[in-house]
Amino acid sequence: MKRRSFMKYLMSLPVLGGALKPSGASASKARPATGPKQHIVVIGAGAFGGWTALNLLRQGARVTLVDAIEAGNALSSSGGETRVIRHAYEQRIYVDMVVRALELWKESDKRWGTHLFHQKGVLFMGQERQFIDAATVHMEAAGVEIEIIQGSEISRRYPQMNPENLRWAVYEPDAGYLMARLATMAVRDAFIAEGGNFQLVTAKPGPVNNGEMGALQLHTGGSLTADQYVFACGPWLKELFPEVLGDLIKVTRQELYFFRPPASQREAFNQDLPVWAEVGSPFYYGIPGYNGEFKIGDDTRGPEVDPTTQSRAPTASGIAAVRAFMEYRFPPMKGAEMVDSRVCQYSESKDYNFIVDRHPAAENAWLVGGGSGHGFKHGPALGELIAGQVLGNRKPEATFMLSRFASLDTTHS
Image (cartoon, rainbow, N blue to C red; front, side):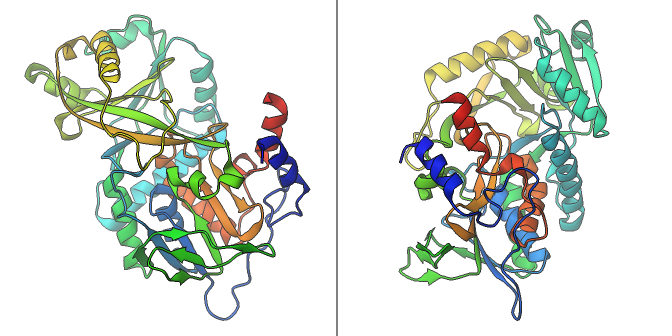
């Protein structure tokens, strides 16, 4: 079915649990949890699924979390060692979510005795002011501490950098980076420790009849039945629900590189330089310091790929481009040895916003995804939001609902 036809089909359906209600509409009630606890299965143990399962458990549900591979595996979008956590967004909803998420990351570190959040500071910089002007308004309104740095001041503060063509920078002292793989595993372990049921199994959606999804089909030949199902399958979500997501999500290939600073510059890069991002096209960002390495990546969306079969080897052109930028912006890194690389993927929604909504034809099935390259940091806060909606205690967030794509189709077709 073509997407425009599908959108017309969506809008013609009866309202299913608030999935197609207009902005501001209240959530339909969740399945009543009379008698035994409501049983909810979450499919996918990444940043979205793991935190959702843990929050559902803490809010009183009986929860089974399933994944085909161990949490934090290298194929997933939640794999790898580090992720940036920053408040700089042009949309207020994400600024507020990061404020809450950071609070929960710190709380979790205390509860679990971990060090998943590293407060290294984050420096956003660039030429055009549209992004930073909008972001600073939202950050200041949300009470986020920031410092505006003019171009001429950048080189004094950060002598590792060449400030050419940089007109502004904004520094967030309370931000930094997260340990991604370890965090995903820690959430899984906490879920189990608090009474959740974790299973390593491949699960496919059950049949949809009379407005509800039936039992999940397992690769073992069995099935798994629950009151509700939450599909948080990262780059595989579109593959499971092509009739719903169609071209609303695409999976893109993203390369990351790790360089070793020269011996004379290791303190300057590992200790003194914050996490950074240069807003523009391309959009480079980096996390210096972890494991003594200088991580750098290009946030520009790569080619569309299959997350299961794509090559995990970096391209020669990608290496050349990132080295040219690095040596221009960070001259002391000229000739630095590349010690590692990674290839992952973004699950990018059509408008870069997350997707959190019911399946349009199954009131007891939820679709969660569209991390769009910026989702990991939000995991704890998004897990709270999703759990509240699934249990009927929270209104749907219009920004994340499927119905928003209908207007996008009309506008951009």
